[in-house]
Image 1 (cartoon, rainbow, N blue to C red):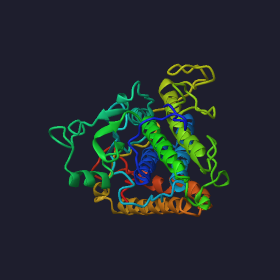
Image 2: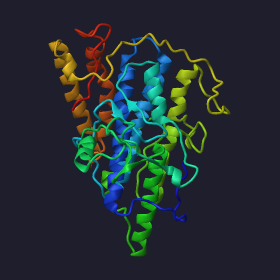
Image 3: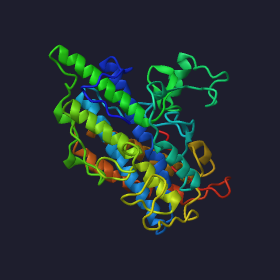
Image 4: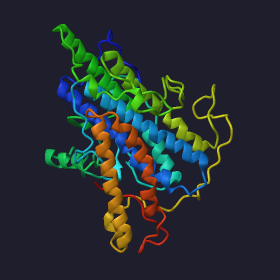
Amino acid sequence: MSVSGSETVQDTRIRTIEELHEYLYKGLQLEHATLPPYLTALYSLHPGKNSDARHVIRVVAVEEMLHLTLVANVMNAVGGTPDLTRPDFVPNYPTHLPCGPDYFKVHLRPFSHEALDTFLKIEKPAQADTEEDRFVPMDWAALGLTSDGSAPPPGRLAELAESGTVLGLVPGEPTERFLSIGEFYEEIIRGINHLEDQARKDGGTIFTGDPARQVTPEYFYSGGGDVIKVTGRDTAVAALTLVAEQGEGLYGGIFDSQDELAHYYRFQQLDKGKYYQKGDEPGAPSGPDLHVDWAAAFPVKPDIKLAHLAGDPEILAAAREFNRFYATFLAGVNLAYNGRPELLLKAVWEMFRMRDSMNRLIRNPLTGHPGENAGPTFEL
């Protein structure tokens, strides 16, 4: 993605501060939407097996928390209020993610070839060649949500949004989607530049948020880059650029600006069976071998729901307990983003402590579903 500088005038769909806040909320949704699939795959791995795969997925999951935090910092800086407790925040899996070159669904699956394929689609780099290519016509029929391809009526569209069934649309424009997540963040950067330029003409700024609401580096360390405290245009652009780079890579390369391997290429290592190293070209890792045992994962039922657990009352109780745990985790992160940044340290620790709650589900076979185990439903 190209980063819009303050000297470059580029068109944007974002014309008001309220529209900027809505885009940033969609950014929070997108960054979080990957966590449940990544965590489900991570904790489905057999104990003591697949150390390479475990490391790759864990690193990406922590960096997704970094991205969530960076977007929240930008939102707070421009006077918005992050809210991870809204009814539409957690997707209803499988969720459609049309923000990319292809239509696909994001499933909750155990570690598998199918799960990895989804992860690669989520993080796939794509940069538009022209302005017109940045937006792609939305085909609702391809998603199976309308019969003729037209946008659903406003009431149905609101219902789909609230249920988390579809992510990645152009806010306020249900006939279009973004070519890639990188282009989505490019639009936000353009909106920030436009609104800040307009505010400065009147002697003001859009960066009116309380600095005390910023999460600073002492409250979060991912190993894949520091949290950026957002105080103005330059730091906002830096934060959003890092989010896009860590997913897709910098300017077509495999590394981001902080010399960390982008998520797409981290996951591609599992498919290629080799690690990337300095000097490698995209698609051709030449580092040490990476071993993956695709059979060493518990067979979690894909996209499991509480309704599937009616015949297993103990597992049903454990699934409900996990959902309460996850809701508490999100509430803690939300508090951290709303003036209590010190709580983020505990929240990130809790994200990996939920392994114990997941194990009570993932290691138990389901009644009436031969060959399939229980798993987290993330129905909040």
